[in-house]
Length: 136
Length: 114
Image 1 (cartoon, rainbow over the protein chains, first blue to last red):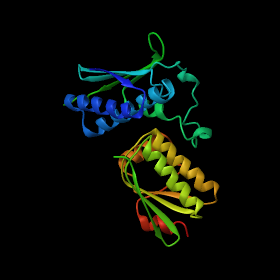
Image 2: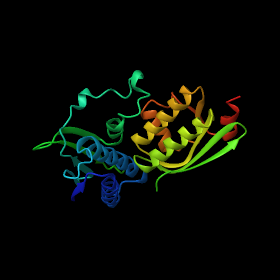
Image 3: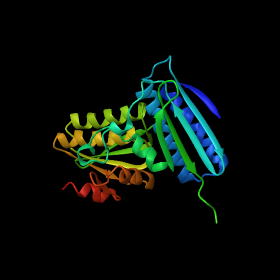
């Protein structure tokens, strides 16, 4: 599934709904659906707010696929790109009371694979993989 | 559904009952305005009841931190009540569980101010 979304907060809800629909069909349980939901919302908010900066002329590129027991989600923006390694560590004592900067931390915590890379052309792409738990 | 907030007084303690989702947008600005309003009115003992909060994102966590620092900087105290497992887990992941005073009984939270 692929979607081209506007750079606004309504798109965050649309992306969450679309991904959760597929994730539910694939068989993720309620707790994993919540984790996927948080990861998708955080990546979408980053794309809309920090990447595209709400620019109505820029789009957010969402793609989701499910196969071989795993859900792969890609969220791309058309922004200027950024170096994730230069972001402040939200777990450092001196940063604990900062109001922002925890989105990537939550993505990391809630998916099995997270990759943040420059998007072909321009912008940033976040690739996330969530695997279905193995059943006995 | 975005967050709904109800404020009630228990003695000199303001209890804020939150219901719904605390996420970026309308919910987080309502939350911020409510806390700032309470502090501006001189309320320095605040219990935030999160028992009916089903969902918090990083923006919502940021609002909790902002509320904590706003109240603390005015010489007050903000305590959290009734965390759901999901909210509890988020505070653990972000290492904020050690920052907040967290209670699972309202009476205990209120008594902790005295």
